Image (cartoon, rainbow, N blue to C red; front, side, top):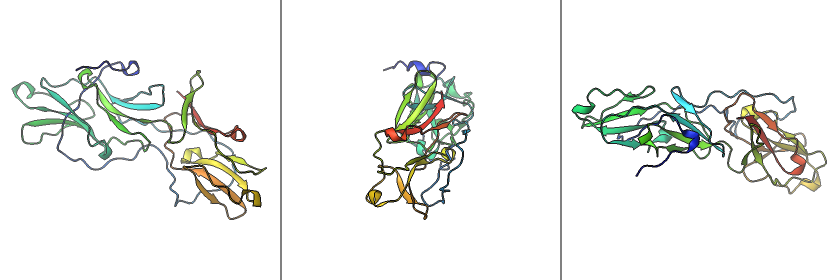
Length: 262
């Protein structure tokens, strides 16, 4: 039974299918994650504007849905004259595609730009979009429900787990940590200078009053060895945009995060 595609995706669309070929080798996404084992400079500096590279592969269109998910869509796909099936089971390995039973009617079919032809040798043809360079983001999933409209792709959450996606109604989106329980420290400060490296948080001077404080869920607690403790949210995948900025002026009110233009 056909479905009507959501309005934010309207355009030319595509199809997917079943493929028994395991294509390992998936490029990393555009984020610049910092692992817990990597050294982190725990000093202050001037906040910087961040440039994030394009998130979708060539021949795919980036399409946010306005409620917190981003999509990469391969569109305007002409399907072979056959019953075509979506094949999205191995997105985690960096590829998606579609398949069909080959016949005289499909003999001259050419796979769309950005994909390649991969028959299984047993009468089934495949078009495979490979090396997708998937974003290292939460909520990554295949988006293959509207094959009949000529498009396929995948989606993910623009904001990390534990944050809220919101907009200001004027073209700016936010990822916000809210209702953050803070230590009782008079010198509590936001630590948002390294968003482009995939982490941010806050710090304070250790005192007896802060001795039992524990960082919020999802944050790593560390120190600089000189009396400053930090709560750091790390390994953040950054949304696409050339004006990503920290949004940390309201830490005293229990929330902070980052923003970018839609």
